Image (cartoon, rainbow, N blue to C red; front, side, top):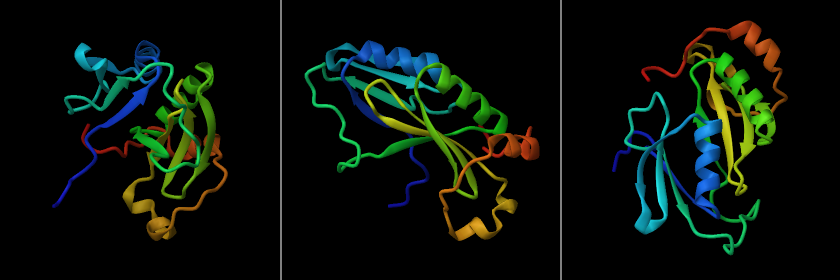
Length: 162
């Protein structure tokens, strides 16, 4: 087996309409497909080459809530192309009431949030590969000085071909 990359993620949500609004309004995703028989919607990011990047399956409000620290998915990480986009993501998450924190992992700079069902996610920007240096084999969890990172890296594209 030789996977190349993760193609999409699928989440169970309590309220399908609420989750769809969150991901279309905050992430700018578009509906790629609907499957009413499964109470599901499939969403695509604007610059994605995938059929869909995120599947949402509505399971109803009686489903038990996600337990932080329990077995299962911790978070999804969405990569942005520039540090400027990361700064914008932090602003949008704060405006949506979804922002939960930020950190520097050396080679990556991250902001965090959660959707209305408590599914956590990371929005991250990666340093240019040639700049990883000491972070080649480490992933610290340090304070992020986003203003300093924007001043240093503004306009630098690192996501590769979109």
